[in-house]
Amino acid sequence: MQTFDPHAVVERLGWRYATKKFDPGRKIPADRWAALEKAMILAPSSYGLQPWRFVVVNDATLRAKLRAVSWNQPQITDASHLVVFCRRAAMTPADVERYVQRIVDVRAVPAAALEQYKNMMLGTVKGLSAEQSGAWNGRQVYIALGFFLSAAAMLGIDACPMEGFDGAKYDEILGLPAEGYHAQVVATAGYRAPDDEFGKMAKVRFADADVVKHR
Amino acid sequence: MQTFDPHAVVERLGWRYATKKFDPGRKIPADRWAALEKAMILAPSSYGLQPWRFVVVNDATLRAKLRAVSWNQPQITDASHLVVFCRRAAMTPADVERYVQRIVDVRAVPAAALEQYKNMMLGTVKGLSAEQSGAWNGRQVYIALGFFLSAAAMLGIDACPMEGFDGAKYDEILGLPAEGYHAQVVATAGYRAPDDEFGKMAKVRFADADVVKHR
Image (tube, rainbow over all chains, first blue to last red; front, side, top):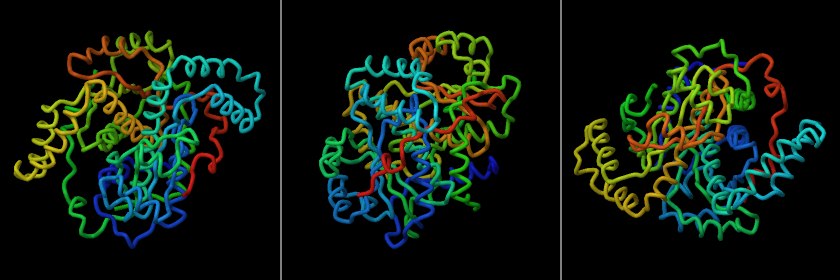
């Protein structure tokens, strides 16, 4: 299987920036969008529990409603695609059972062989308050966001992660709580507008030695 | 600039798994490790504030101490490299000022041009309790974790994200709080041992349609 050149990977990550102005006329081709969905799905999570859901909003009316509760930021409607990264409200023993059943199905292993692993997960899940569980899930969601943004950069697709929105309103507009989820963070993706001045600016990072420490 | 084929990117992400057993004799070459450090540094964060620090622990004695407070998981000492992803304990107005100064330096823009942006960030930072600020920073750290793991997969380097450790003990062993940081999550990286049975198992994910919803 092919691996990629380290310099080329770093070059692509350096090209990435949080796009402020998308070209509303350019759409991400279907095969490339499918790859970005796969990147989210393939992200790791604690125990592999996948405490998330990724809601891709294509409907123009819904996107206009979401923009209105996102400080009117234009990316919400102008980008080719919009994903709402949702956290599971709280992990329950039923979530653990469902996951274990999925392992049984995918790997064709007997449930008995997973008993110890299941009990470990149940112990963790039962030891968390609903609030702690939601916070844990919320953090995991950011791994999937990282996978999405990173994959977009590899493919030459622009994206913008966004936290500036009213989560409760997103929940309401998308009907998330009824299904046991809450909006956590958003990403828009597409292609930068030629006149987006931010894409031409130097990336700002603290000096490497201030960020990475060796012990 | 080169972009990557979507199928190849997905194939690499599918190759990735949370490595349980590393080959202790194989080291990541310096140029590849440098690329992984760059991947963390280039990760996005809210406002670009970079509320994190990445501590790469090479010292064998320190790694043995950390393993003892990580449920004795062998990856902590056997992997080629160990990174402790740390969150800034809380964002302060001084952090915002330091960041704005960095923008001024990197982009050679006058500080006055950033006044509005600075005040927006100060408003956010001052509106958060220390606990809220720490939680916000903690979530951002997982984006950098995602960038690290994703880049490792692109390069054909194995990795394992780990939350199973005593954060307070990590803080103490590495002296993090004195510098304003706390251990958030860990990643080990290197090369899977040929007899690591987990690398040969099918990846378990819920069905795509259960995870990605279109509206």
